Length: 222
Image 1 (tube, helix red, strand yellow):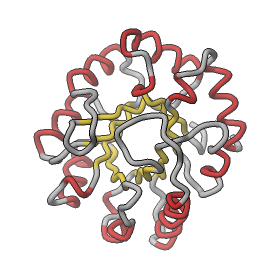
Image 2 (image 1 turned 90 degrees about the vertical axis):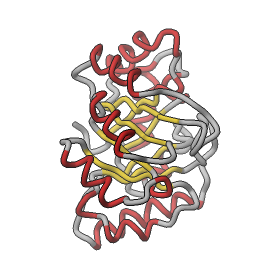
Image 3 (image 1 turned 90 degrees about the horizontal axis):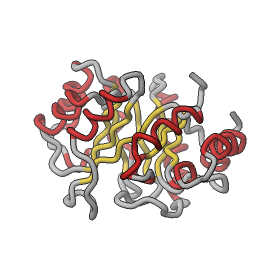
Image 4 (image 1 turned 45 degrees about the vertical axis):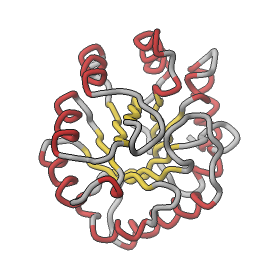
């Protein structure tokens, strides 16, 4: 894999032709399929349950699924359901979990890569005590819940802070960015040191996905 990865968010795909869209995404060269889980509690929207992920994993067993849980509360039952469904990366928000370290440990013990997601107003200081359990940090550059939003400039500084903190701790987790990633913003986002880019409407909304991904990679310096 490249040092910079691109995760196609199916939140922006055609739900009635999802198998076709995922196939096109893989043929275009997407690295991960980003699976946004929303529950009408943590965010004002509802999307995909574990049975949906299980069906996709069975259809595309070779694909790495990057599941982002925007749910409240994050419980053993919720996490276990998405692990069993086939998530390869599993990320949740610390605000929704009473025992963050224990939940990260549970995910890792199941052989799944564990991550924390930081909302725009969530400070990254808690990461200092969790680096040994983190495979990924997802920095939200918009408030979660809907696609097609604009990057919040203050979040770019947060990405830099996360990268600096990781370097100081001598760890190298994936630093993923989700929200407003498109050809006009990805260069600035890539300059912060992020190495996983969640692309939604800028990718799935393009008539030629291979060309769209090529353009995004070019702007990201890949």
